[in-house]
Image 1: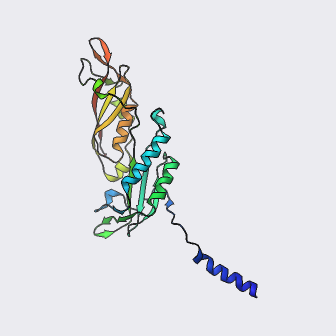
Image 2: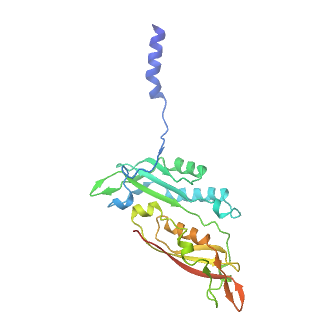
Image 3: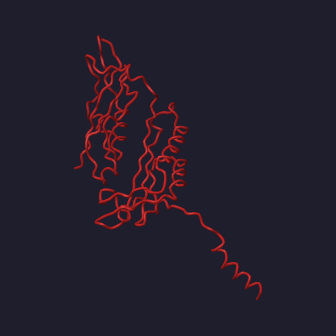
Length: 244
């Protein structure tokens, strides 16, 4: 009888003697329960947590994992969507399929105690999403001044603008948020017609900037010509994102 009583007491005490660490569940996409940004009248706002500190930590780890010498194709864009409750806590998280698992763990460890001013729809606090896309410029640094701005024959994509446009898929986050517009890319093209560096001059967000710059980098150009010789040239390229 004493033995049975001992086990009953032990079973009663165990739940109170072990403090469980908060875990954030990783889930598939959840648009029906957690409203995307384009369905909100007020977006969720971070009030407890350091967004910039997290980004700095990710960048530090990212550059160790993907140094400049690696090929561009091995460098993933990191995609996250935080699913925020009506009370402003992160209940669940969506991880992009190409994310690096080590960086994912940094994010999961950092955000578990974050708190938000919750998203609002029609005057009421609602379950909502807060997307975060982290894309990194991984090209080697270049001397931009060594690339001419104007030459006799300016570079052009082989196959025309279609060669760039066919490489672009409208980012799902941008679609759901109703984001559209024109992204302006500045591309630096060497004597062989390769894009050795590119950057966004005008962006619209939602993953469109990253998609545009990636498409430009993957496109081969006819090199610029000056006095019968191929030369390094910089060009600006507008890429339009328009919802049907």
